[in-house]
Amino acid sequence: QVQLVESGGGLVQAGGSLSLSCAASGRTFSTNGMDWFRQAPGKEREFIAGINWSGTSTSYADSVKGRFTISRDHAKGTLSLQMNSLKPEDTAVYYCAASYGNSATMNSQNIQYWGKGTLVTVSS
Image (cartoon, rainbow, N blue to C red; front, top):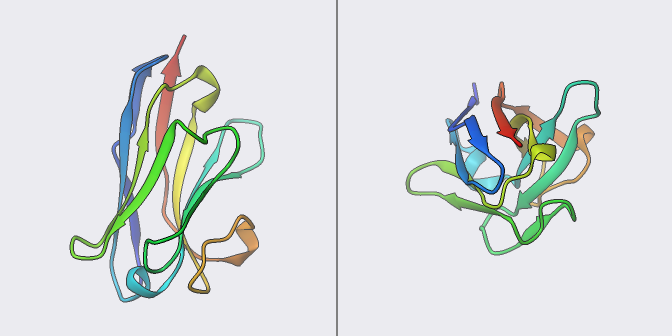
């Protein structure tokens, strides 16, 4: 069974940085596109960043472009999200996700595996 486990969430002041990590078990990490989604209370779950199976192509939501960086390490079996210049609007539960195919997806319906999420709180 494939499992995705996020870590690295916490409390940070606006303008600060956090790095999230997702540890993946099974072979899906090496062959599937990977994504980060987030969901704030009372809001829909939204795509924020994606990376293809080889790690050579990335995509970002406009709201985080230039501030967040997604990466993957096949040797370590981890997916990372470096978050800089954090804003209170970034406060949400962040979810690691693996798509059905080799490419990342912006559509949550195309996600094969979900992590349980890690909470990021940005204070003003």
